[in-house]
Length: 396
Image (cartoon, rainbow, N blue to C red; front, side, top):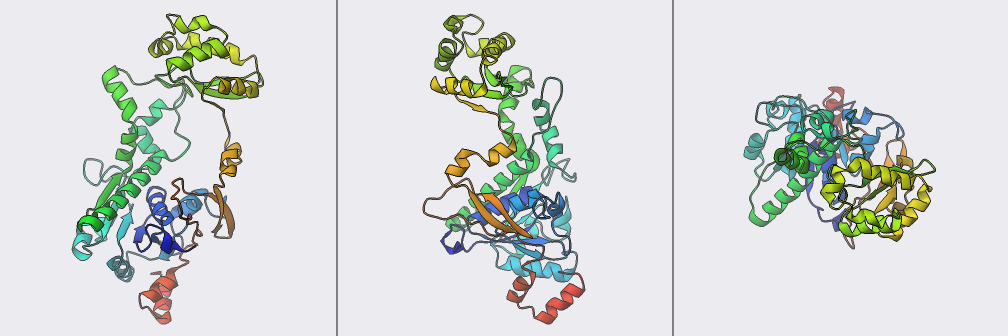
């Protein structure tokens, strides 16, 4: 596609990235038309390429967050590799990195170092726990952050905790890095000022913990683990139908509660039952309420339950597995799937969730390790002989 039509056309992003958070941020910049040059280790590349081998030999993680990028291999511990990086940064707009704690500073790639050499460059640092403070030197992985923010203590059943099924801390950090970079680009364009961006996995997920944090601090106890149930709303959660399938629904207000009692449970007197008269009452008597709802749901198959709930305006749905999600009628009817190139074949990918009216989505291939190395180096003035020497020495 012609990326010149996209909003970030003309913006160059150089990224020394690995794993999930930084690649997720930069893929979204690429979605909007930015040129994203991904710097990888010679030979092996980003270690996330090998998390699994499910997509024609490449990991599902890597395919998800690395389309529409160019791959350049550089050994940044070799002065020649580091100099090539600085040549790219001289004409770049954004530099993103999520290197191990202290690594960027040792390479002279910290925000302060870059400000002197590349004053127009917007550096974006993604760390685990922040670049200052008592945990600045600690490594961080998604589940460690889920544990430290208290998310794991909220997730699961009363008997057992659980991690979330996706890399939620990485995703949160990637989203804030993405929005932070967009804000910094806008600020530079309108004021000329350059503001480095810093995001940590811990502080990104801490923001998402806002509601349970307030509930705990001012309520005296944290929300309980309730599986699919909700700590402050009832009824809310999954109930088993006669055919063994699960149906999820929630009651959001008193009008819906009255409709549920009258038209679904067939017990209008429950509307004013002192145990259930308000939302707080229903939460306090959750077990008794759930028993009533469960008895009603056990009478009909899931399809009939969903039909009845929809008829009275109650938000409801079945519980899909991932295979059912892939075949979801909303995705099919709205044409959300596109075929993209990946090393060794093609794969189906979802369009970016933010549609910009009149602008096509960019869905370019996922690069192989070092696929664009020679092209990029030649554009920097390196001859075929120069490139051959760099390859022989393991610099690229």
